[in-house]
Amino acid sequence: MRAAVMQGLHMPLAIETVPDPTPEAGDVVVKVGRCGICGSDLHMTEDPAYGQGAGSILGHEFAGEIVATGKGVEGLKSGDLVSVIPLKSCGHCHACRTGAVQWCETFGLQGGGYAEYALTRPNQCVRLPASASLADGAIVEPVAVALHGVDLGRLTIGDKVLVLGAGPIGLAVAFWARRFGAGRVVVQDLSEWQRDRALQMGAHDFVVDPSDPVGSAERALGGKADVVFECVGVPGLIAQAVDQVRNDGTIVLLGLCTRPDTFNSFAMLSKQAKLVTSAFFTRQEYEAALDALDRGAVEPRLLVTDTIGLAATPGVFESLRKRTDQCKVLINPGE
Ligand SMILES: [Zn+2]
Ligand SMILES: [Zn+2]
Image 1 (cartoon, rainbow, N blue to C red):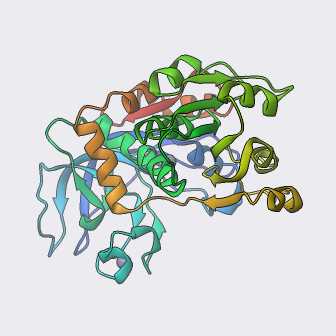
Image 2 (image 1 turned 180 degrees about the vertical axis):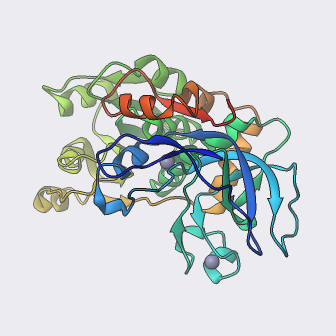
């Protein structure tokens, strides 16, 4: 099969012919229909903290068709369309049984979506409902990440919500926050690229004012935020969020930052701000995100700005290292 293969840190991906995956007992092979390019995929090729190197096939946001099943697989057959939960899990430990698949004893990250075929396990497959497309199946993951964060933010109806960062996760947070009954949702970014998309997805306002991030957000919200969602992952933004949250408010950390960060704990304690971190999602949240798409939520689909073939993937992947007007780019490996 053809795949976009990692050549090493700080090197472009290359299209290679690699062996087709063959299913061991309990495995399934998915013919990848759509796979999203995620900001963390870009980070994986830049930062050794992610543990990826030459030969890795990235891609954890994918959906497709089951084309082969290993011995002992029940409940799935060739032809079934599934979205793949990219959290490797055993399916039967206590964590898995309760849906908290991110805490499975055998936890690992699933990749492999930048290829024509990918190997996974049946317990990671969620069947696509009839009205959900393969593209829907590929965007479920970031939408579920955002849902998990918004759930942990414990929004109260009418809350003022500030979202830092207008990437796919930030925009999906704006979508869910509005659905959860937030009274005012403001997205803050350093560029105007995603203004229209943010407003279409549920934000009431969009602010860009690097010279006065705290004041500009406060004016747009009509006060300090009840909940701030940090969806960037750059040092300094927790400190900024501390200035932007109200007394006794909540900061939810969704942005992945692998560098040390500092903030003034006195400032944070003085207002009793709660700092909550949000990692991955539960199976129930993944299914709820897919259900929202199935039931006709159009906003998450606005995240997709382009669909490309495998051959174009290395070039487009490089172009996404600097910010552009792209939001979520999907790969169609069969194209
Ligand atoms: Zn992702
Ligand atoms: Zn498990």
